[in-house]
Every structure is written in structure tokens, then in C-alpha cells.
Length: 364
Ligand SMILES: Nc1ncnc2c1ncn2[C@@H]1O[C@H](COP(=O)(O)OP(=O)(O)O)[C@@H](O)[C@H]1O
Ligand SMILES: [Mg+2]
Image (cartoon, rainbow, N blue to C red; front, side, top):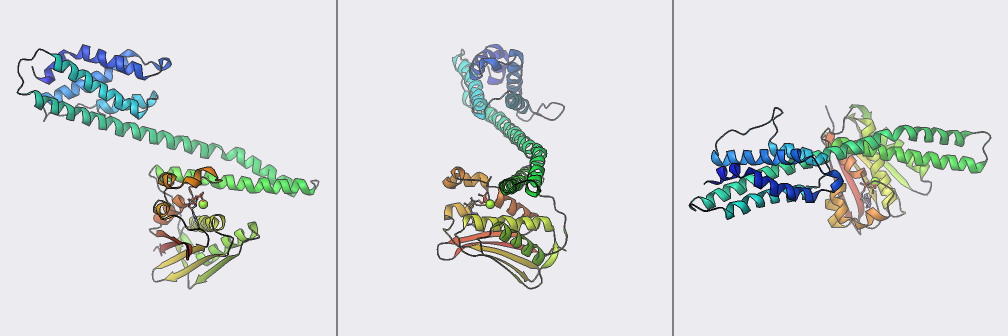
């Protein structure tokens, strides 16, 4: 008997072995309906049997175009399975088929290797479909979750902000209260910035990119404005801002302001207590902004991943512990620059300090 036929005839014992295994994987309070548990496994196996019998045949999809392995992954993601558990389930499915198959009464062996190989390939295919679907579902739910946090925290934050403003300006308040109010106000602005970053992060990670509203802007005005803001909020810092040539062009001014803000904020926050400089220069067809600070260089291993918070986590042991920010700043800067068809790079060494350089083509 060929393996395809064997699977169909022995569906019941195969499913039973698999079900026993799958039940052990999930906590008892989450035990799913046995029918549902079996249904997908049965469909996956039927599909594999059909594929073994007729490799050139058409695949059976549900009305939405999903394969049985994909439907299975959706259900698993919803019921809180981890990806390891999903993998273990497929291993169990494979094992329960091959076990029974090797214990059958053998009538011929010439096709044995061929059938097993093809079965393994078919299981692997189903497995990778399941994992791809599962990962996508996880990513989406993460994005939705982050998006909800970013969005829903705004309104309570704005009433805190309002209260802080009131305290700051109140005529009855003594100097202590005024001080308290202005500290609360500064904190609420920082929190607002974090939430904005979080939303931008989620948006760009969901594949929507950063939306731009290009307009005629003068980077001389924007860079000076941001530098002035930083001087006001960091009285000790020396910030030199310089403009060379005509740096007007068509960009999203608010977004480019965010680029200056993030780079300058980093230079002040992560640099030594020495002057920080911002230079904006016009060249043929493009404008180059560079932000420089001294201080300990960024380790070469980290420079490679510096624009990618997910990767950087691995090479940046300091970041997680002693940190006030979300670490999304440079990621968003790079996304904004990319949305303008520009580029960004970093150079950082002991002798020369750290410089971030952004090239922005003048958009038509
Ligand atoms: N100008 C700089 N000088 C030294 N290190 C920097 C500089 N800019 C960024 N870094 C390093 O890169 C990391 C990531 O920066 P960023 O994405 O802006 O996140 P955050 O500032 O929130 O930590 C920082 O934590 C810091 O370690
Ligand atoms: Mg930063």
C-alpha cells in the first residue's frame, strides 16, 4: 500500500495519537474542542495524501484562499499557542504518521523511501505555511496593541498637560507649586513625544510608511528654531547652529523638524558636556544636515544596527537598564529621511567624536 492510501485508511489512529500529544501541550483551562483540534489536522493530512497521490493536482483552498495549514495557524495564534508549540504539533503529526507506517505489514518496499521523502516535503511545506501565517498574526496583534497604547494614552495625558499649565501660570500658586507645574509640563511633553514616536514606529512597521505633507520650507528657519528650543530647555549646553548657502526646498517641514530634534537631542543626551554643532549646507540638488558631538564613541558593532531598535537590543547592553527613552528616535529619523528619498549615516570614533549626516534631495 502506498503512503497516501495508508494515511487515509488510518486517519483515525493517526489523529488519536496526534490529539493526545496536542492536548498535553495546552494548559487544561484552554482545552479546545476536540472536534476543532482534529478538524485541521485531518484536513492537513487529507491535503498531503492528495498531494502524494497526485503531485501535479490543484490545491484545495477555502473560499478566502487559505490553505488548511494557514487556517490551523490562525486558530493556534488565537488560542495562545507559542510558535514552539505549533512546531511541536507538526513534529507530532509527522511522527504519528511515520510510526504507524513503519509498523504496518509490509508488502513491498520499492516505493518506501520515495513516499517518505515526499511526505516529509509535504509536511515541511504545510509547516512553513503555518509558521509564516502565525508570525504574521503575531506581528499584527503586536502592532494593534502598540497602536492602541499610543493612541489611548493621549487624552488622559492632555488633561495632565492642561493641569500642569494651570499650575505653572496660576497667580495664587507659590514658587514651589509653579516649579512643580513646570516640571510636570516638561514631563508631559516628553511623554507626548514618546507616544508620537510609538505611533510612528507602529505605522512604519505595519508597512504604511511615514505620511508626508511636503511644502516650501526653509531649513535655516527650522534648524535655528529647534536649536533655540534646545538652548532654552538646556541652559548649560552650547549649541552651534550654522547654515551654508540656500537651504530652501520642498519637504515636510514638521517631519524634518523631528529629524533635527531627535539628532540634536541625542547629541546633548548621549554626548560629552562639550559644544554640539548642527550644520545645514546646500549642494547641487541636495541639502546635507550634520549633527556633531564629542564623547565616548558608539561601538562599531552597535553602529551597524543603530537605526534598528530590534537588532540594537542585542549589541547594546547599556540601553535597556539605565534608560529614559524608548530607543525609537533614530529608527524614526531614518524612516522620515527615507520617505524623503534621502539617506543617513553615522561616523563615530574616539578622536573625531560622533557625527550623524543626513542627505536630503531637493524634491520637485
Ligand atoms: N549622538 C550620539 N552620541 C552617542 N551615542 C548616540 C548618539 N545618538 C545615539 N546614540 C546611541 O544610540 C542609541 C539609540 O538612539 P535613539 O534611537 O535616538 O534612542 P534613544 O535616544 O531613545 O536611546 C542611544 O541610546 C545611544 O546609545
Ligand atoms: Mg534619542
